[in-house]
Amino acid sequence: MKIEEHFYLLKRRIFKKNNIIFITILVILLFVMFLSLTVMTLYRTNEIASSNKKTDGKTIYVYPPLKQDKLTTEDLDKIKSIDHVSFVGGKIYFGGVSLSVDELNKPFSEAEIFVQPLLEGINLKMVKGNQEISNGEMICPVNFYPYEAYSFDDEYIEDEEETEEVFNMKKKIIKSAKINGRDLIGKNLKTKHITSYDYNDETGEESNIKYNYQDFKVVGTYDTSYTMDSLYNCYISKDDYLKLVLSDFEHKGYIEYEHLQEQELNKEYNEVMIILDEYKNMNYVHQKLDKLKYVYEDEKEVNQGDKLFFTYVPMFITIIIILVAINIIYNFNSKKIKGRVSNYALLKSLGYDNKTIEINEILENVICYLISFVISLSIFITCFVMFKNNYLAGYVVEGMLINIPALAIGTIFVIVLCLLIVINNKLVAKKLKHSVLELLRKEI
Image 1: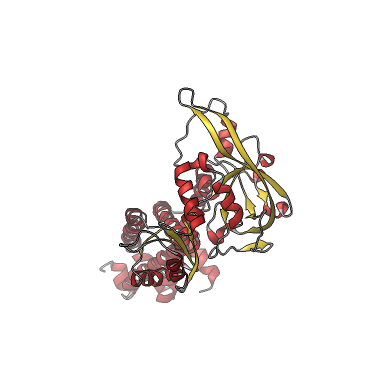
Image 2: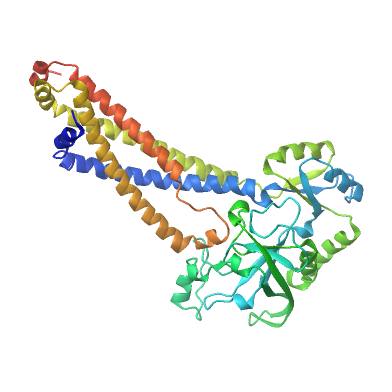
């Protein structure tokens, strides 16, 4: 039978009531599967990526052995000699400093960047320029967004001075506000950060604010997706970073940073941070530190509760829905095929072989499935984009990977399609093994 003949037989069947009901049910089931797979995939993608890519995932804090008060230069040399350890230094290098850049301010948000020291072990995927920088130089994201954004889990506090229009802007990453990092290459950014201020407990106002000003020349841009950095995260030299932190005592806590400064000057530490070349070498370094009797802890630890909830719950839901889909596909086709027994007898008497009839039935189900898949996917993509644009802007700015899980959806498409074909083929073949007379008598 030619393909045209198949479609001639199908065109009257596709939009019959039973098929419309079948398509509607599949649309709902597929949408729920897409939703659960997206939750699981986004969590797994970001959890794995943050461990493999982010500096936090390959950072370890090392403390002296139990009967030792300080880590000496000899200890530092031992730690540095461990394979895969790229950087060893004081905890003062951990974190970063927020700097304001008034010249980049927008009507809906002030511009604020977060600077970190470019340490050994931090490997950037450069878009333009070189990773090696000198004092007074800076590397920023190629897709630069140093503005405030609203996250879905933010506790929004109404501000009388903030209009609804401004708040709606913060819910999105406004394309017009994005700065192409390439346009900043060669420019000097005048930055400032608060070094001290007086705070009035009664009025809740700050006064006598003192700033430290420093110019940085942007000499390169990097791809944040490679390291999962935020879209406002820039890198400066270790010396520049150290100066910023040590001039920041009163603003961040004088006692803590004075203590860190003393450790850095004397090169005797209560603890040090080490950065590995790659996350996969964490276990190896752990074993070496154990042999050397050092106490240590990882900067990043996986929250097992979140892992269980965001991985196994969606997986369980997906499996249940697949089982429900199998049951619906089986019952729907079983009922439909039972009502077409006399039709099969007619087709066989007209000379159509079993294979042709089977293909015709499979095509009908596949077309119904494709229609339901396209409708469900269209609804899902629309909802995903709307939700991402309106509520997940803050997560995007922070460097999280929020994309439609194409691979997972493609896998589900193939699995359900195969189940549909197999179930349909077995049910039809079971009927067609009988003769025309038996089919007409409906004694099967």
